[in-house]
Structure formats: C-alpha cells, structure tokens
Amino acid sequence: MIPQPANVPQTAGEEGALPRHVAIIMDGNGRWAKQRHLPRLAGHRKGVEAARRITRAARALGIEALTLYAFSSENWRRPEEEVGDLMGLLRLFIRSDLDEMVRENVRLRVIGDYSRFSPDIVALVDDALARTAANDGPILVIALNYGARAELAAAARALARQVRDGTIEIDAIDEAAIERHLDTNDLPPLDLLIRTSGEHRLSNFLLWQSAYTELLFVDTLWPDFDEAALRDAVASFGRRQRRFGGL
Image 1: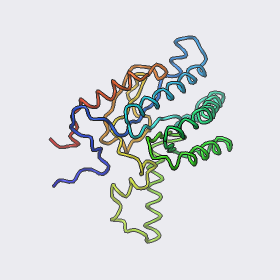
Image 2: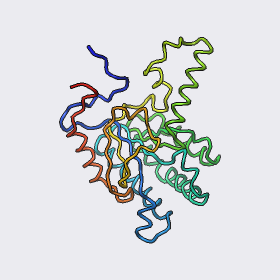
Image 3: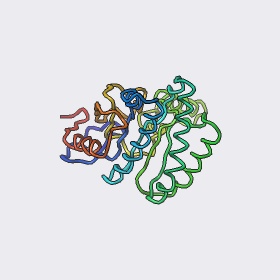
Image 4: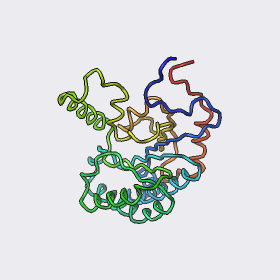
C-alpha cells in the first residue's frame, strides 16, 4: 500500500461529502464599509455579525471544526486606531457569545500567540477557553496573532531542542513529528479553506495544513457572506474529486 501524506483529510472522492474542518479568511470588511461611505469600524462590526452567523450555520450543517482568521501577526501593521477597534470587537465577541458557546456545547480553541494582547483580553480568552474546555461538540477555532511561518518556525525550534537534549534522533523528524508541534495538532485535517472578497492568496494562513486542502475563493465581501454562501461552499466541496496525488 502506498502511504498517504500525513494528516490527509479523509473525506475524499465522496459525492456530497461534508468537510469536517473548514477555515475562512474573513476578508473585505474595509471595502464593504468604503462602498457605503462608512468608517472601517462599521465594516468590522458587520464582520463580527457575519462571524456569529457563520459559526451558527456551520453548527447547523454538522461541520466538526470551523477556524476563523480573526487577527494575523501582520495586522499589527495597521493604524493604531484600527487595531484598537479590532481589540474592542474581540472583547465584545467573547463577552456576548461565550454563554451561547457554553450552552451549545461548543469548544473554543485559539491558535496563535494571543499573549501579546492586553492583559484584559488575555484574561477573557483564558476564561473562555476554560469554560468551554469540557465541551465535546463542534470546535470553534479563532486565529489570534497567528502566522503560519511563525508556527512552523516554532515547531522547528521545539524539535531542535529535543534533538539537542537527546529526546529524539534527528532522523525521527518526519511530517508527523512536525504536525505534533503545530497549533492545530489536535484538530481534524483541514478539508476546505474559503477566502472572501475576491483575493486569491493564503496570506500566511495555515500553510502546512493547506497542502491537500480544497481552496475556494469567492467575490463576496465578508460582511455579506451568509448561511446560503456557506451551504454553496460546502456543496462545491462535495462535488470535487480529491485524489491526493493519486489517480
């Protein structure tokens, strides 16, 4: 038997298959606001509403894990006022939605180094993670101060330390060893990655995890992405033939 690459999604070649793990690059808040002659904050607020709408829709569809790219490690380059607005919306999202996550048996996960955020946000995130840790239903993953290159560099450093300390042999470093040191090590394989707003790039998001992922780029701006759009994306996934390098 020819071995498959590590962490290959298992929903291959089945008509109408449902992706276990969907990730979304939520792009287009600023352009949505600009088209309406509104401040960018208005677009970000609508983006939070879209995130809430899609997390509920994903649960209804039976998607096991949903990962949302909320704040990248590059977003610190934005104007200080906009970063502050985004932090305020993050606070609002956690405070307003945590009780629902607990009630709906959603387990919250965070990927990325959120320790750089202000102490009150770190405390909010820690509390949300603790309160949902025992839940065993759908997983909502929020990428906060996340960058895929930094994630891979951290995995390389961790493995190098183990080699230095004699914990593992250098020849033991394979794909599975790297994956064990990624932020997503306990998540299902990534089946479908969606980017809204018409851009066609990954923007340093889940680069390793996307090796065999189905990619879908849609023109819809994130604030306008709704339940029907998610259903269409899932249907598109189900129509694709996935061979993972085979015939």
